[in-house]
Length: 401
Image (cartoon, rainbow, N blue to C red; front, side, top):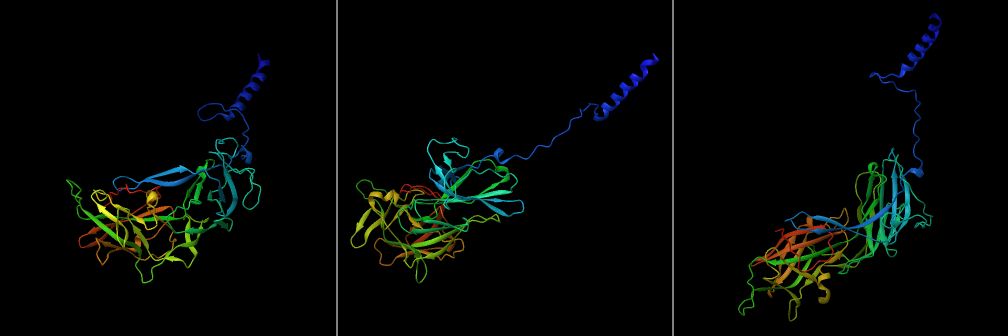
């Protein structure tokens, strides 16, 4: 038996050695060398891809919550994109890339999402466009862009500023102009589709009027009550009122802070409009043009009559209820505005003042100024300010007074 002792001792030593990796729970862990996982290569990163929407609002009454809505904007656009590094320095990634839209092409290439693709095209700086991948070591990305059918939007400073030219005050929407909000993508959203949110770089303004007294409806041959308004105007309450008719606007996008884009009017023509002028399509008074008639129908509970721009056409009146105006600029100091109207042929107009706080016009917003005609005068009731809503007809109801 003595001759087997060395082998038993040797086997015991092997067992002792193999138990060196035993954890506190008595489970033996194998000797495995762990190899660190290498950082992913660019080819393993997700490609940057885009989609786009046009931002609007579909409900705007205080009786119910405002509802933001969006619809696909199936248009080509130009995009700028910057990568913000861990030391807060920035590096341009998309330098004026042309992003093209094509029907029924979604997911047909690595960069294509929702029908938008940029690989293989040529940028506005005449650079061949290559696929871009998310850099997961970055802090965030910032994107913005624009849509144009001409040369009315000009980028500078590597896209940090977009100069919008040719905007005109009037009653026709200028549908060739779209700019985007600043799109900030935090690290947690890397790899997701970048949805560009476009807006119109201008605003729209209108007025609505209703009677403070109950108006009787027609019945039994009686024509019913009516109030006729003429010489309707709305403009700055200053000695020399001026509303800019055309201007050049700079839209600036920040890289180093959490602020959003800002707007400034950098040049304007010497052509001004002194005031907005309005009319109605209900009747005619000799020498005064068309009038706006307030009746029991358009001044029912929580409704008001739309005052149409003076150049609106009756055949297209439901699409011409607004003046399209230039934004006032981020640092603009607005004056008070005065609404003036002659009631039932009075020789002296009735007036109401709208405080300057209501007279800042932001891009992609619409402003409805609501007035009430009283026996002894005119009252400014409220300003209904919402994001853009398509259309605008006489059937609008406002439950905010």
